Length: 399
Ligand SMILES: [Mn+2]
Image: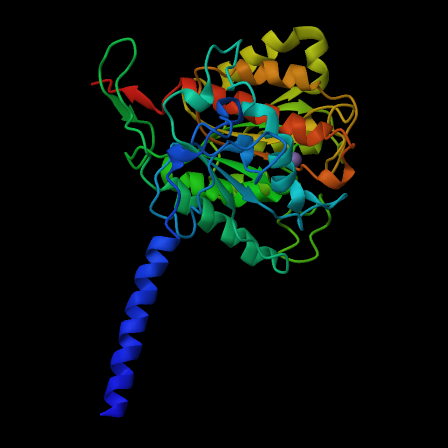
């Protein structure tokens, strides 16, 4: 009898504990989070919004959702997710701190509300649900395992149904049809790197929804190098690094050959054969110095002519910007574009179908005390989500 009572009491306690846990850890509704410019002050019977210099730092003060944990059923339209991986780097390590650094550099983005004057849109108030999912858990001890973790994490987010319906075409009023190959309306993921190696698993994930994808790649380097050229590849794992991931992506058929393009290229080469190899990997090229002759308008024109109205993946290496403006990066190259020039070029992508994007190679340890690089990275992403917010990922059915 005594034993029986004990079991009964234990059972009741467990039940009570579960009920209490459910209630006590209920997630705060997203609408409760306020941007700094919406701050109210004590006495208004409201919780004050964080100042931009206080509180927990998410990208642009966006609400944090544990998208790969207890928030795995939460839908969104655009998600920021970190991929803190930097063991594919050839020169300066430290991009594992990129996601945290970029978030710190993004604090002022919503200070006045976030209206983008030249693009005439406020991406944060465009009716889209935008969240910060935190970081994908990435092991620092095993590159192969880490690369798989990044692919799995990205895929899990990408294949979640989008929060907002695709809606109708603003001109014809006809319903929009998704541009994916699986016919589904996917949310967009903005990944905070991490060194550039992460783009191989990201493109594997993108391929699962969009098939071979057109890539716009801003970088001072090609990143299509054969492993035998870049580092000599002493092992199969060493052959996958931040200078070779596009070579492998091309070998795996992840890239749309001929409609992909690099911008801001200014690297030295092992020889002219590197460009022949780059051609074979499917890329057109815009050299950084071309800006002196054709300007940002000419560069925008080249990019738009190359990708057309195909779905596009956008990968931005912070080293596309000159180290005068963004010094904190893995392999800096002088002679790059200014932050203003890159931002202008990104706004020139308005209307393209950018399905997802990343910014990589931000290594905050080499930054100035003024946070030049992390601020540039955040502001660049602000242009990217502004462009995204203006163009839904759908087209009117042609038949
Ligand atoms: Mn790169």
